[in-house]
Image 1 (cartoon, rainbow over the protein chains, first blue to last red):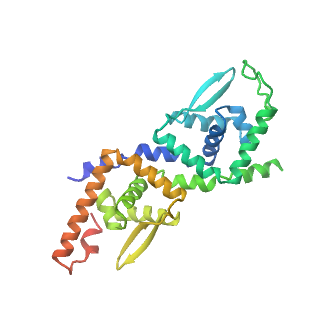
Image 2: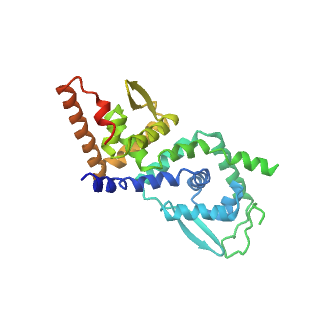
Image 3: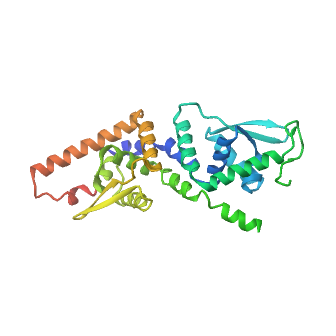
Length: 139
Length: 141
């Protein structure tokens, strides 16, 4: 009698659990933090700042994309990502809380500084279908 | 040198990741929400409300205990748990946001109704027969 109800119940907070699952990884947290600091970022920017490989950066960005955290824009061979949460939605509030939590961490501040550095070094005009990444990531 | 730097960097948001990892499970979300709404709960209350086994409820509660979400109080054979996040801390704000998300969820309300129903029955049984041991009938669903 109670068995089918329990079966259904098991799934009722699955969406929310999935939301938190997407935040339960350091790399994804860092990526979201960087996207909060700068409106739009190229995969190569994230690689350069976090010191990770392109495949790892892309994989985590696709994960975030599939969950609706970010949306993409293709520019030449590189993919650009930006946050895509609706203002006032639970996800938006969650991001604000995340920014608040991470804002008090000096390490997070260091990451932000590195991002600024990486972006100033990068020459302008990269978006115009440039074949190579010209930022400091050294590719 | 670069390798070492990256190694260290890899751990800088580990605590936050762990924090969200503790919320990345339906059972733990449900337990946290019920504790947020009801205050202190016994393991058997969680077992009844969620329709899970006692070992599963205890395991998740211990997980939450080790991450500092809840504190325990032993009462005879039974373990009682309550939230222990300091007001204004990230955990507290997160719980409030969680409650905000769940308040609009009809399924979450059903869950709460189920818990209230069980708590009512439990109190009735205790009032009727003070000699009744809640551990015997209630631990196994």
